[in-house]
Amino acid sequence: MKRAHYFIPAAGGLFCTLCPHACRIAPGGRGICRARENRDGELIAVHYGFVSSLALDPIEKKPLRRFHPGTQILSLGGYGCNLRCPFCQNHGISLEYDSEDGETLSPEDVLDMARRTLPQGNIGLAYTYNEPLINYEFVHDCARLIHAAGLKNVLVTNGYINREPLLALMPYIDAMNIDLKAFSEDFYARLGGRLDPVLHTIRLAHEHCHVEVTTLVIEGENDGDIEEIASWLADLSPDIPLHLPPFYPRYQYADKAATRPQTLRRLREVARAHMNHVY
Image (cartoon, rainbow, N blue to C red; front, top):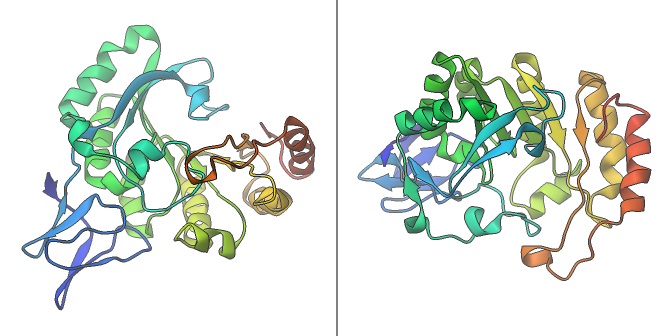
């Protein structure tokens, strides 16, 4: 546990200013992400160093297709999320979890692991699996060490973060894959969030590091948004890679049909009318 960054005192509690939720947290309470707690007027990062998942993955699994292809990256996950996607593919660590099951590591431990996997083709560290930015302090501390060691930092994120903390992190980040769930405020409202902050994150990240974007295609939900997403991204740069993976039945959408291959092929061509790299 560690004192958190980005909060302001308020009557009867405090406001967390890390993400657009701006949670007002009463004494003893936690924010939507469940990772930040008000203890005696201080905001505490209660999951600092808690690790749910650790693996050496191909960089393409993040997914990053145009950032050091053919390499490996040490991938680290924690607990919690600040959105509530009913189709979450990792809900066991993001939405329904017991963080007491996790291992606790220091940033120095993580750097040592990254160095020890260099002979296996590792280029650095990816913060992934759950939403990493709710565990901002641990990501920030690890990223500084990884960067100072000359290794790469990769964020795999839903992009739901405020401008100030994101800018403070960007000097250490080499690449991001940002999950753009849809291009609809109504869709994001169902997830407990808003579209515009995610678009802002994509714009800002594109100015500072390599960016790729992922939209999980769910038939009858967001498949009608793909052309609008591709057109919007193309205005930033048609060279931003766009990933269109298929939905598989998971979590609260366990009874929903998986996305058909023919739908993905059709939407790939729709996106290719605007983008140069669609996967």
